[in-house]
Image (cartoon, rainbow, N blue to C red):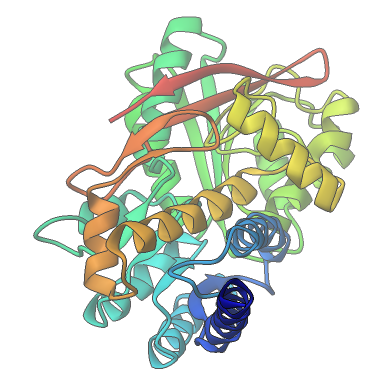
Length: 379
């Protein structure tokens, strides 16, 4: 009788715990991303990783006994819109932010979220200023897990200097913090690598026609074109180049694969070499598992944006568990003291500038196939 009563009491207690956990308010993580505009497709890829990470967290019991939810807002890859998004996320009292995808958007958001003591992590934005402005004694709430343009161009410069694939390069970039920052970083390493920059052209985002730039490039006849563009501008530039008969190696921060795969298969990007942050073919158990999950869910290999969103959310979650709290300052401290194994199987820690982007993936195209040329450690 006593045993029966004890079991009944235990069952009642168990039934009471589940509703109590379910009734607790969710932990809300903000996402600032360009759902519309020039980088909308890249934002979609980012959200593949973000959503997968949250799904896995909730399947494992959530965080601190609470479900994790997302508040996803569209910053349009625009600084003014990013400020509006940051203010809305602060007002909503999100515990942390994944974003803001584009460098200009991230830079515009940094002070707002820092004043509110909300950690913000990007695995995509690459302008060097983000690193320069972040860290101890500076903006302590901005973090980056991908390498900066400076780091990526340093790695690319070493490769170009050692392999000597190009003597002359023309630069084409979007007129944004990403485009100009990348171009400046490339110029800084080109001379050391023995590469002459013969021209630099910038264009506005959402440019409809690249004919004038491409015509000038045909006249200059560089050995390669270094591009610093995102989303629709990048693919439109490459398509128009193919239409005009420009078949030339590309370098800089050009995407190799993805939506450019038809151009690669048509022979339009042979011998290209690009500094990147991720590649789906990286031979690591962690990456193979990640690729399999994304393929099963989205019928596609993951992109760098997918990796960036996935690992950023996982780091936020790990910090919340480590801190045992949703307090922004405690989460920030937990991130700064964290050692984390990323999707590529690399052990990463955050330095004094809140950067954990210490690996650059160099990609190349040979025989119409994308391959990893090297994974280079950087500071």
